[in-house]
View 1 (tube, rainbow over the protein chains, first blue to last red):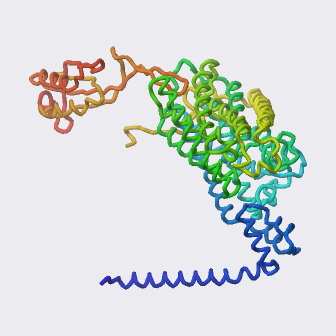
View 2 (spheres, one colour; view 1 turned 180 degrees about the horizontal axis):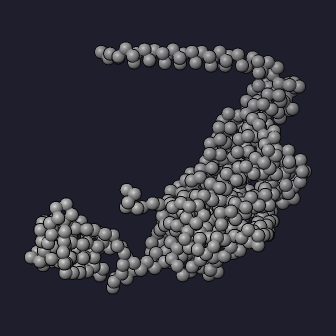
Length: 503
Length: 112
């Protein structure tokens, strides 16, 4: 027979009792809540509301069209209710996208620089996260997703300092996700976009210049662009804005994140100039292990980025999940295979670079294309980015240190065109709302117009910001600081302390 | 007394140590070093960038021995470290003036 010590038995008994009390509390509350909350809604309205939740549609729509109309009931209910499933998925997605920057990108980039600069990457990623969060609260979110400017180019001022950003959904963007959660989710995109740019100018830009650049770039490039592409009144929001003059589509940020960061990175690295000793001193990655860990985190986090961009836990999110996987896997293998045939060895950096290129390429397309199209997109992203990083860059000899342009700029641009060609209303029914006449036909032309505008905005504004900083606070540290390494000269730390006397 | 400095391939360290322990050599100092001889370096490619690595990793052994066992130790190291391919390393033999064991103050052959 099993005998338990007296103290343990007492503990078990107490725990059991506490559990019972807790359960009874829950059940009594569950029993009482429907009567109070739904007292004015009919059964039909309540069922319609549930169906709207399951279908991720407007819970108020049923009440408007239905035969049983009540002035309160469903509409009042929907203004307060959030869909727990959609909300939960969006909070997980938010965390996944933050994970892409901290520590995903920090490790991916950190491993690729030299030992003396590894911490500067970490500091930049942390600094950008901290800075952009505050800017997003103060005005960033409002400038993108507000609408009281009644402008196709910039949002509004109504959500500044997060006024009115509360638990209730903002029906312009989601019927079921809390606006707070939506705003946090979008914040993570605003963080990772400038963080991607820094890869081009690693090992040679002042910390202060990175932070000032980030602030200005967020306000002058990211906010207007994100509003134009995703804002409900946006100029290029083809899916949701019936009045969009450029009917482009961009599911998760091919223009807003990838093209904007890639092309801005190219301009910035040309203005900052190459690293001291570029082309003469060897500058190999100091840790391919960190780089690979970072790649894995980016890939995992990208599910939040791409599938989360459905802003719901629905079948479109599921489709984005599938296409993201195939594009990344195929592009990763493609890059490594090309290396193998070209040079005889498949490298870890090849697999990593290809995976990121595939993820970038599928970003604008993931919720609009089929899994077969994702395989083709993976092949294209992997091979064209490979050529951009190995052939084009060495031909022009610009120092885009970590190939931000070659991967994000090139694969992002490619993905946008591809999205225009392969998007299908069968995959995403939302394309039929305003775009049924052009999907599968002339959508690619709209994509090119949107891309042209993105390119012009990113290039001109980045050039303007970079030159302004160059002529005022300066972009680069002193030559000595650069040679010593930014870890010591800018942050007073070392990434690795291997000293026999410290063991 | 002589000081033997042997530069060998890193993956031969365990073989050499085992061979020397078998002939009762009682101590050695091991250092990871980099350098080049006739073997030269190799090329590494990271995306589009090619780097030539001139200095290859080697291991340096330092062993102090008495004159009587010198030849035996040197031939043991040479035998254990040999692969027959370029880059096997070199053995340098230097005269050693004095040795002192710190714990006991013994000097000369007794301290080796």
